[in-house]
Image (tube, rainbow, N blue to C red; front, side):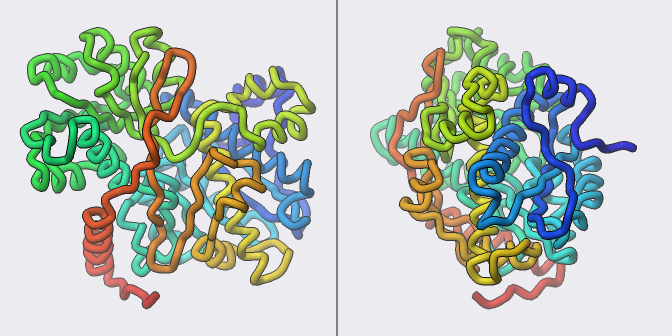
Length: 438
């Protein structure tokens, strides 16, 4: 068979470390949550911590709480290697599993997300592309089955420009500043370009775009251009090995690292540790905290790893992308819990979970109770707004750990939301869709 629960190599590693593996789908009456992962391939260093975060949070709910309101979670991994074709095959393989079918999909790839968007409406299975995917899907009137909460690439791009403006002494000081975007040459990497171009016209900064081809190991020509152009600030939309190569190259030409900001997919431990001391000062966006000092981590160590902190550390606990997997799993399971409040404590269908997502309200009190106090911001999703107004935080690498170095930055909603609505309207027209009323 082409797909396994996990790759043989990953199973071997998991067995050696005594890491809990995902249970297979068994009896009816269980909530099935599929997991598209990439533990192998060029992006495995980024994919593994995310997958571990999902797995450990689902395992925590099962072991500590008996599942969600007493309904056991069953999850199954399918290896995509961050490949769009394999991702679609995984979707088709898993969508009808479980007593009520798949609850929702978290594709963890913009390319895969794009391909699943039209399928979601037909199969009535929601897609949660948390902080990635098609930004226009933030308009729930057109994209009924797709959610981008808690924030999007366009919102993050606007937050970056606000941060730079603040560091320069005011937004008016951006005029004639040179800002370069280094981006993964894919649909994902191109996502922030329209917003950055709009803001360049508004504030007068000079924007340079430099594409890096997959997987991103060859960047010599890119950094030669940077040495010639001498930008005031660099933004990066990278992934996987592209990030660590770029950080090393920046350090090599002595570019000021506190003027180099990566997207939240370019701000993990794997992106900076290879550059050693040269990475100190590097910045990245985020929408949650790093580190393993939160209550949710203490519960994971206790209930999932039997109190063995070393074993938990070997599974990346507390790393940025591990924590992102936890936050994503929280959105997933709390959407299911929200749906249960309306439809009863039983396995939810994809259609019911979609309702739960659209009515999700993660208050501070609820996040605190879940063990995420200080780790994630309160957030609310509505019918019309599938993104919400989630703020962005800037974190900085000090050589050993990530630290918050900004307040929570609200995106420029006056710029971003009209662009989302315009892009969604164009999609609706192209695909002959009638936007629903909200």
